[in-house]
Length: 160
Image (cartoon, rainbow, N blue to C red):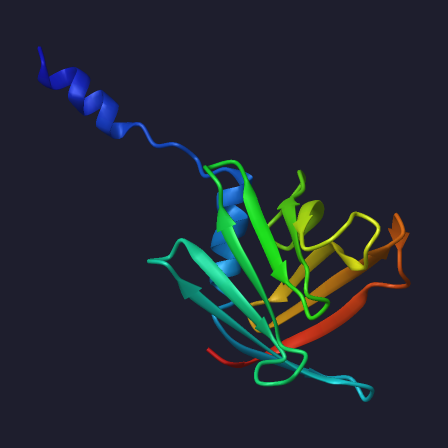
């Protein structure tokens, strides 16, 4: 009689949350990505760290404009992005509802080393075209409103 409840409990699986699904998609980006659109060249590296608990995105590595974003789960339902910006502030964004495996967005929730009116990254959108092609859009913010069009990176995998 004691075995049956244990087997029933063992058979129960919990579906991953949207935050967990999006985090899994971000993990598939591990490697080096790049773009050249005629106006600018960019290199971005995604690295998994902390025994799989965090993803480090390094934009423009080795340059004076190098920036890092760290993605991690905060419990099963919340995916957090903290951007360590060349503007010397650290905005934190959370995954917005409605994320799919192809399109997901983050929006500003707080920041350190900044006032809310200071220039900062306020929103990020990912579009996963396929396993070797992604588009990211980074929206700057200043004085309580968007500061121009989002900075768009049309990236292709260079190395896994």
